Length: 212
Image (cartoon, rainbow, N blue to C red; front, side, top):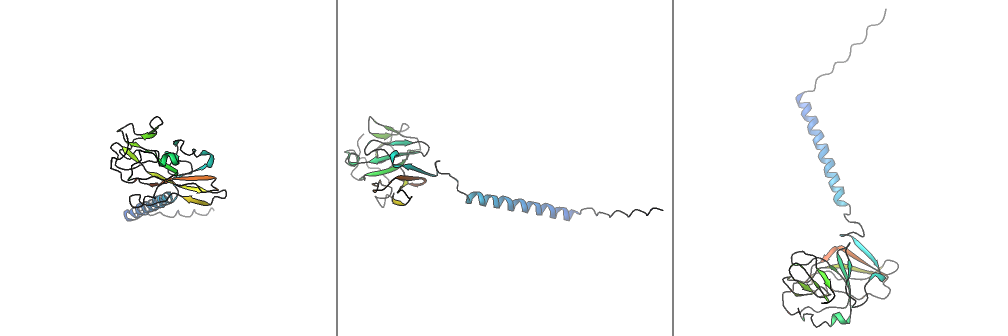
């Protein structure tokens, strides 16, 4: 005679309280997962080398020759200049804002209302097509509605081993004229690195002093 089948275990229905506990637990797990993901996202570097917001490493051969005019680097949104005696002695240079010789990386956005200014070789200066602000090759404002000089990026001069030989001085150019100023490349420089994530705001400049 066949044995009787064992009775199936009974399953109690989920109570309303248990259901709410499950919903609460799932919500907390989702919140923690989202918070952890956001933390990791913000901890990771946002910009890669060679894209705006990151670092651009250039060989010395890519640096414009002394007093030859700015070189455009659209991917980094900067103009690279190499200022020499001609630039330093420019008669249009306002006496209140003396310049130095050397290399500088100038942010391509006009400080007035954010338009993209351009280099005009025939006038030997930067000019903004939107509202007429004008700047010399060193980024100093000489005309127009802008009230300060152009912003600069930090440059590092590197030797063959990657050692930093010199760099743009950081700080507030309103208090320290050397902050953001061009600097001469030391002997042994084989590359320069421009950090487009580190910008030095141009000094306030509201005095007329410059030529038109």
